[in-house]
Image (cartoon, rainbow, N blue to C red; front, top):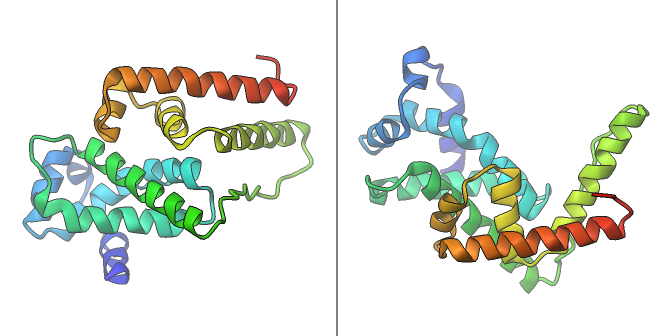
Length: 198
């Protein structure tokens, strides 16, 4: 099934710019009617933000499997998708659920060590400093509780509005604000302890 879905979203050529201009609701409607082209367009539209979110929440080792799992759940869930809901909110909820399931699986296996696989780069100082700060942010996120980490990633790294985060996580807006405040404070403390002046 997974290979078939990968073939669907990767093998077809776009029918032009008109298809890419279709809104999510229209693409979802066409998917439910059995149009694989529309599903491919949804995949291409959201694959990058899903990858980014999963990377921040789970690390790089689970990335490809996680993205595949998210879009498999989307494919299976589309017939039950409420037309009144926003597709991106529903997709992020699935993404967070996949990340949470992965985290729970790792906890059961007692393997909660998340690693950052740094790409090889030139010896340019600015590149090394950029990697250093990315590594610090990644390590800082690992020190946060799951609840704080999820809100910080969605808000500060994925630029999602607080109201939408509340919908994705199905929590009150006040809880989002509280978790964001405490998560940022913990990140700030971690970075300061690492010698980063904010």
